[in-house]
Image (cartoon, rainbow, N blue to C red; front, side):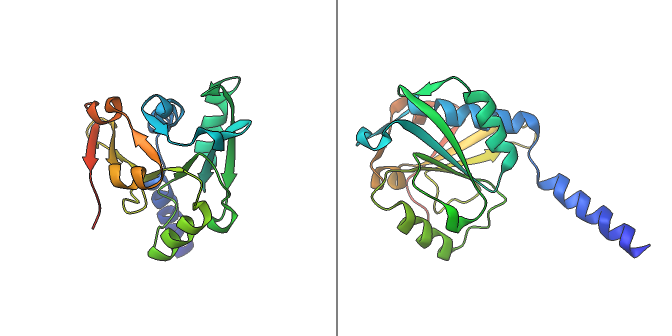
Length: 177
């Protein structure tokens, strides 16, 4: 009996933390269109492809692969790379950390060391301190709100353009404590 109760509780916790398909689609679309609203100071970094890294979120990686098939960003082929461990992260142009990643100061410092010298736009779910763009979901309508940390972006050599900061579903955060 207690084993069955444990399984039910585990299932409920997994379901409660997973994204709805609509949320996932909105976030993926945002990531694929973000280049319209930001500018990398050094575009020579892109090489032959534009890489979006996804940490510990197979569903999001799959959604991005499906949506980006036969498309380009800034004239470059889109590569979606999935990382299962923080240690596996390699340089990419956009890095998405889902809410499945528990972000600590140690992880922030490690990430900063891994991507140092390569302007990487970091997009997260609820990892405010490391984020350049941080997603929030409105409970009443599953709408996506994003928070922009201009200081983090500018420090990385990525400039937010006016359109990103003026959208009705955006909030500007100059810095986090």
